[in-house]
Image 1 (cartoon, helix red, strand yellow):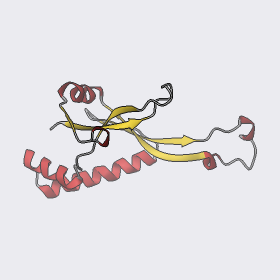
Image 2: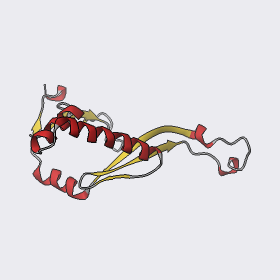
Image 3: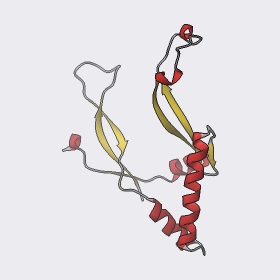
Image 4: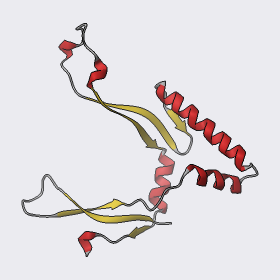
Length: 138
């Protein structure tokens, strides 16, 4: 199955005034959900669907727990997940103040995914591409 992409407009901060720019962006073609993953694993192995769902559900709960404990989740040959914070900068002089609350400077909590090098290499070398219609190419 090819990676689908679309041509979309973008801004180029170094570009000339009055010039329109475009770039390619990957387009989501659907979702591969928990149920589909469980069914695919069931058909590829001798394990029942109920057992697959039980294992995946337990894995999901353990991943959540360990992310909240600050641990990096390493999924061999897939990649790693880690909790991530985006925070506002603040003057170091406010740190020792008794009223200082560092959590008030946190803007966003997220999860960072870093793919395994072999997975990334596989996708890059085995990719096929398909362009979908775009407003820019009307």
